[in-house]
Image (cartoon, rainbow over all chains, first blue to last red; front, side):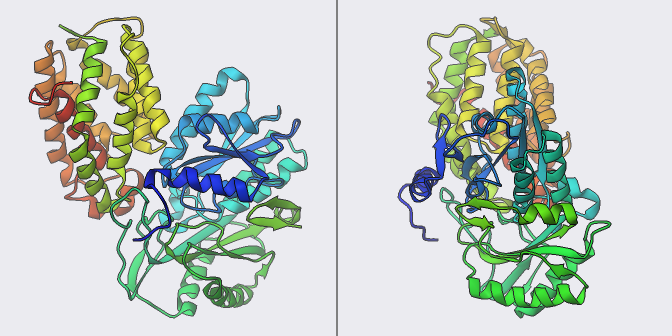
Length: 332
Length: 207
């Protein structure tokens, strides 16, 4: 698999160098330069939000640092969690004196490192809380939601918690909003072709030219089924059907939808998916608020798409509409 | 008969000397169900550990803690963080001591195993590196020479691979492929055995 890179081991650092050159609102920080923070630094008096995750998913996770979203993000190597030190630095750099929410996807390495960083920070007096994104319905049964992975739907937690923090809410409230956003969000993806970790010798999985895999995760985690390629409408019908079957208890009639490219799938095909998804949501009696279509959480060159639904009540709908600004997503 | 800092440094150096085939084997094992980069990650960890200067250190606790920090700085992967947790735990337990008798390493590894289980959330039987470590900790028990500890550890590690090969993984990403993990070695368990073979075997190249 061909990649535009120099040395594989420089992939992440050279990517970050380019990212901050293009977007001066972002700054590399931390001993190893593996924390991205807002150029203005943490705002005193505001609850901080620190996230983190492996590289290879831009705009997730690093790209969502900005007003109304994240304060900092720790970055790991491709498909590897950030180091303990980077997590620790991301939390410190997000601290504006009112505590820091650690908000990231439910992955083993990320969890261990943020937990260890929290232990090490106990003596520094920084109060932290944790909320884990777990929107991928294909990665675990509904009875095991705490084992599900976080994928593209994590951006709703970023947006909603970020809006709450920006409005001056305390740590308890920001944490509650983040947990509520996670509980309100469901995602499912499908893959058409694999990706490859820059330092690996082979793609993360193989998929036949005429095949599709439903439910695949953003690191190539195995999905629900693999079969011959089907028309877009049939795939969307299954995806929306599975998402609605898993809808949160008490979910209302407003929903935001994110149709996301996993990297190689073009906008044209995302709009084809959206067209049928919107019709299905209308048939289900749901009204769509702020539809999002584009690459929001990718897996490098993987072809495929995911659909996320975030079920909104008055509080979440209000927070979703407030201004936010990062290099890859602007609201208001 | 006891382990000193120079034994630690020599073991790390031997692991580094043998890292080439280990990296390839682990990448291949990880590629079965994962993204195929466990070998590269372990190579970074060992490389960073080997680059850690222990020449002035006498305190085993300080040396192990330095190696833990090196591992933690090299990677944020689950396995790498578990390695760091294990080294940190043993380092805390032997802080202030220049020698740790070989007969104490079984209980020390058991302490590391428990700390790693608490950090990562895996249980014994889940087919992870913890199962290999558990077998090694039990096998070396109260062996009181380096040679006896090495022989018991290698034998137990290899046996644990065989014992678990036909069982399903119940942790992490591999749990999603539980049925496909049957008949395959867990990359973490394999890493433990390959690294022990390089660092503990009598025939391993000297530092």
